[in-house]
Length: 382
Ligand code: PMP
Image (cartoon, rainbow, N blue to C red; front, side, top):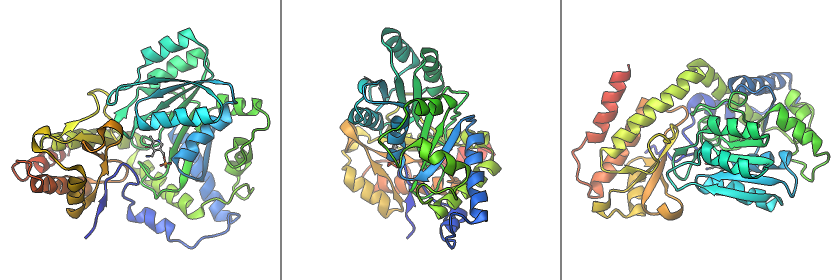
């Protein structure tokens, strides 16, 4: 039986995107591929309103995180890491290992570092770099990146945003939000298979890279990739041809849906999804006002003594893969993606799988209660 991939990435890959990965691979100097590559880079710049440069290279989100830091800092620089959970902490680790002087503002899991907190820190000390995770995958929290971006730009630091669990599903614009380096990857709200690292760099970030002169990194060096992004036949590292075609198809889907409508759909459906899952007695980890439109973290109802791994195996048996919680919440709930090119059929099936698993786990509920919430919401929005 089909198992829906409802973990917070990779997400379901629709047939038209899958088909691009099955195409016969061509040379990276192939004129049609060069054209396709240029269009991907151009679309990413335009859709994310970036007057600087976009980079598309083979790698995962973690490579993009490290690449961001590598190109805009040198050992000894001061970094302020705003951490809302597991992936915020990963930025602190990367910065420390690269010899930066790191201070961390840690939010309680379920909440977010605020622009006021960042402003206060920046008023006390000079920082070269500030990092924020747009959507924190361990908690389902979305940070107010636009507000923080304004504060960071007033201060003059380089603003790095991890958009891995947000880009393509949560509103995110480079120039208007004061972002200097936005990083992401293919397997979340783009709905492409894993394998592509994506970065957007502002003019300020590109100038910063230039001012560093020669850096120790080679694969991650913006300067090495800049000519390739203009023309992929100018080789630095072999481009992942089929994944780039897949991303091109994903961008076609985004453009035909309309990026603003896509963001609005994610918000509407996340709200419905939350209503459906909480109607079964699960609670939402993220504080109201900070809930991500792309993924959610739900905690088990206390009174039923749910065995976490058993519950998630039951959901898988019923047709959907979901992920376990991280950190102090491990064993206490589950994490789910609801982003990318998923439609009503997928959302209905995912909630139905959870509903059956919940009943089989002994949670007392009327069959169809959660599904009813979704059904009503879908009818109301049409
Ligand atoms: N940042 C965030 C917010 C993430 O969710 C993830 C992956 N779950 C990463 C970074 C790392 O990306 P990858 O696993 O593709 O290296």
